[in-house]
Image (cartoon, rainbow, N blue to C red; front, side):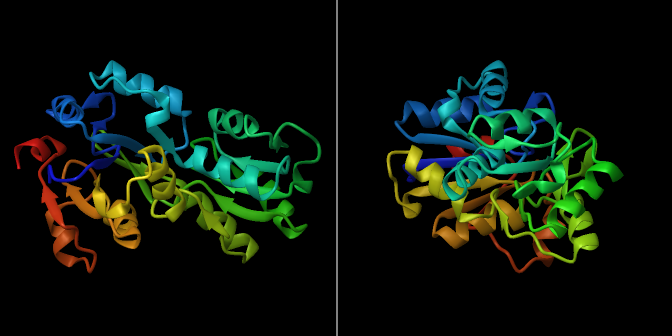
Length: 262
């Protein structure tokens, strides 16, 4: 695995779990950097901007620049800014995502009387999701708004288990509108890995290893792009899940700490 020139790491369940680094993760990243390898971090969780993730990684012993982090919210913001500059968006998400999308020049309609007139409805991981948000999204889509999402993870790994993620929000909106989400910016979308490769100096997918804890996002994204994949067993996926799945990674590791020892 040390033959690769670029390494793309998932965060939750891969590099850290909750507020603690996976044992050996800081040393592994240091090992790769000292060997001259490029390292990128990707999170499907749109709860914080890239700067906060970089601060957390640095606090956990992995010094990181915000430019080395990609989130599904950031990738979606880039896509929306290119697709429809200045568009109005109603966001089913938490305040940091609203601020991040506004920084791309989008008009966030959540605090106006015209939310139902939005050009886009954005679905995301939202721990404040309620009937009011669902109804506003429903009305906006009925009036012609396009429906997009940051990510489609079913659950988010936390210490002691998992909690519902953005798939629950997407499912609720799809269920009442009868309209399927048009675009999901996060993994396994090609938008994410293309952005990561560009930030690593234009490395090709074949030169990179994608490391994560989910088969349906991390591993599928790597396979679609033509990159190698490594599944770690410190997050959502267990060996029994792997045995039942048609999605098979190139490597299976107990944790990311194993990368520099293989």
